[in-house]
Image 1 (cartoon, rainbow, N blue to C red):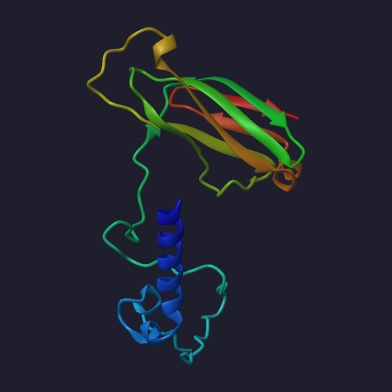
Image 2: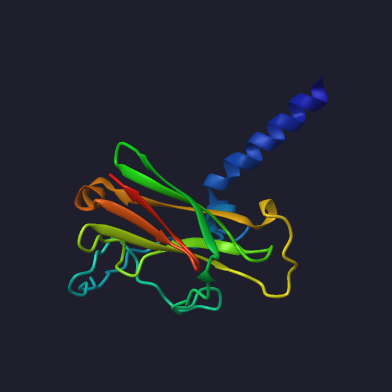
Length: 173
């Protein structure tokens, strides 16, 4: 018991020493990084049409400003097209069949930027398809893709058309 009291008193006296001459020494962990100083910052003027809250993209080793070109080709057949209504618009869900197994990165691509032309909203069902894979069963060649469309865009469109290599599916209002 006496040993514990002695050790605790010694520890308290060491800690109390941090306030005196020990305060300025390099052995004190509070002095390891130095004192903080205020520096004046020169405000940067944002370029026109830019949001100051969004940082500009910079080139680095890990992220480069390269525009990636999508190298997909048209899927062989469009099997099913469904337009499901949501609170904010709709989801266009499409199923298709490729010629061979192993298709990946399936997308619905619009040439018009997702805007209807003359009341028709047109998408192409595309995927990156390997040429050296076996044909396989129809179930193994089935691919699916979906895209969200806002309610304003759906209100301007009367027809949703999805194009494949051999056919096209049309969904009317």
